[in-house]
Image (cartoon, rainbow, N blue to C red; front, side):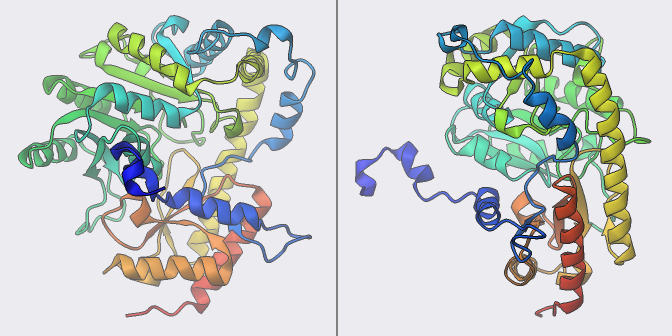
Length: 426
């Protein structure tokens, strides 16, 4: 098809290549297996959770959960069957410790948090306008905003190019500076996005900072999108996770929208369940209309509702899960420290944020990319370079420690060997 035969909207994506998907697919097509494919690719780049598969799979495949009937093959409400919205509202109320019970009528369900971000960008901003977000950040956020809605991500650099702090954090001053920089460059700012706990840094934002951000956004008439998809993936001994829904009062509750899903905390990304919590009636009406383009199959909604519908099972699962994810983070963290690497002491999430500047330098992203390709081509190991996560300073990488535990162990050993053999190109 020639360019003239497609729309201007389609031209934006015609040659689009998503970095994270590209290398995930390379790994999937030649996946490491200790016995059957020991030289295959080890994927420690994708944000997957295989910590508790031995608990999840039996639960998911039990007769109680995996049961389809003819009623589920009929048309239903496109924004989430009530059974699913009630189940999600119960999880959020109980485990996010919300100030008041979450009303199922305030939830709109679509096919994953990716779809939540896409549909919110469409509803909250016009093409060419911007949404602020702390960086480094999960790289697909840019795609989720830009690919269809053509809304731009504007960075709030936590790690700046000249940064000398080893482990810098988000502050309200950094938010204000990014906003003022955007406005000074004649950008129209419509919203701010926070992932809490953050991806890739693993920070948990304290309630005082959150309130400062909510107040600042309210002063400037901005929406706030709070992505809490890692809310239950917090390590033992970390600061308390404080959900946005726990605040008794917000500066403007109609402009603060909370995202949640079951893909991360429960390790079932393939079910594609995401939910937007909003009290803004006009936005809610828009989301319900557009949700028909992001429909979750009704049998999947029924399965998901049954899967998370047993509070006692959830408490058992989360107790084991939190212990395992805490232990695996510490084990992986300690391995990297023994290698002599600086690693951010994260509070939650799936990732090690690795300082590989001593290995690949910090002067250019060309050097960072060279080491990335060395890992891919020589070690068959995929971890994500910071440039793809909008990190302003070269030399940082994100490594997923919640993948298959055997893969993580083998991948860390490959990283150690690669570091020993790599020669920095000046």
